[in-house]
Amino acid sequence: DTGVSQNPRHKITKRGQNVTFRCDPISEHNRLYWYRQTLGQGPEFLTYFQNEAQLEKSRLLSDRFSAERPKGSFSTLEIQRTEQGDSAMYLCASSLDLDGELFFGEGSRLTVL
Amino acid sequence: AQSVTQLGSHVSVSEGALVLLRCNYSSSVPPYLFWYVQYPNQGLQLLLKYTSAATLVKGINGFEAEFKKSETSFHLTKPSAHMSDAAEYFCAVSSSGTYKYIFGTGTRLKVLA
View 1 (cartoon, rainbow over the protein chains, first blue to last red):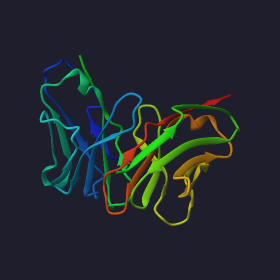
View 2: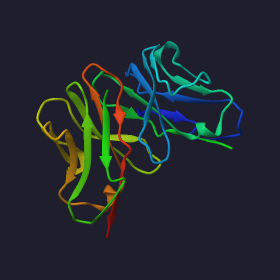
View 3: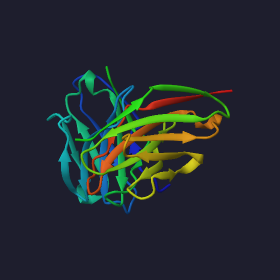
C-alpha cells in the first residue's frame, strides 16, 4: 500500500497524559500537513512541513503540541498534558506539488477522558 | 483572507435524482477550489479541483462542479445519485503558491432508496 499511513487509528487516554501520533506519507511526497477535524467541522490546518522544515504552525496549536519530521520522511505529532478539548480526529496529508492534490491518511482519533 | 461556506449540513436525495451541494468562497486572490469526499472511517479523497483553467470541472464518480466568479460559487453536481454516493463532502479553497487549504464545514449526503 503506497497511501498515507497513520497510527494509531484510535487512542483513548486520560486527561493529563501525553500522546503521540505517527504519519508515514507517500514516499516521494516532500510536503506534509497535519489537520484536526472535530465533529461537525471541516479539517482545520495545524502545521506544514516541506521536507524536514516546519514552515508554519497554526495558532490552534498551543505549546502543548509539537510536531516533527526528522529526515523529511515520517512525521510525529505529540500532545502533552492532554485536555478534553483535544479530543478530535487528527489527519495527516501529503502532496508532491505546492498546488497539487492532498492525499489524506485515514486519521488518528483521539478521545481524552 | 480566504473562507468557504457550505450551505446545508445535511442533504437528502432519492436514488437517481440530481445531487446539488453548494459551496461559496471568499478570496482576495484568484482561488484554487477543491471538492473532497469522506466515507465513514476513511480519509478525505479528492473528487475534483479548479485551478484557473476550464470553469466546468469534471471529477471522479460522475461529479462535476462549475466555477462562477460572479457568484463566488463552486457548486458540486451529479445528474443521478447512487447509493454509494452517501458520504460527507467538503469544499476547500487555497491559492496559487500557498499550502494552506481552508475547508468548509462539510455536507453530509444521504441517498434514499
